[in-house]
Structures are given as C-alpha cells and as structure tokens.
Image (cartoon, rainbow, N blue to C red; front, side, top):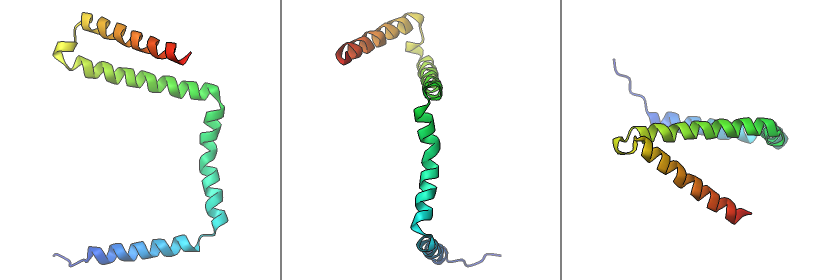
Length: 101
C-alpha cells in the first residue's frame, strides 16, 4: 500500500500558497503584529524587578549547570578544586570590575 507522493511538488505548492498569503496581508497589519509582539519585551525591560528575577534565575541555572558539569569530571570533583576554582573566578571577576570602574 505505498502511495507515490511527490514531496517536491507538495513543498513547492505550499511555498507558493505561503507567498500568495503573505502578499495579500496589508503592511499595516504586519506592523501592528510586530508592535504587539515587541510589547511584552519592552514591558519586561522597563520593569527592574521582573528583569532582576529573570537575570537571577538565569544566573542560578547557569551556575547549577556548571556545577553539574564539574561534578561529572572525577578529577575536578574534590572540595579543594572547588575552592580553588571559586577563588580564581572571584579574582577574575574582581579584575574585570576594577577595569570597569
């Protein structure tokens, strides 16, 4: 029960339908949709509390990922290596902050 379907023809027909649909949509509708899509992003950017929550959550998830990665390497999973790596990162971040200010 195999059917002979020409996938190239179906893809080309779908692409033609999409181009036709996009040509029919007025420009002001596209601009309104674009503006509505940007609105939540601008709202989050203006709200410092929400931006802080997102930033803190991202930093925590990143730190957990680094911790899980390091714990999977047997040579790096000792407490002394963790302390040394933490001090190294603190020194590097301090040097970066010193250059910024």
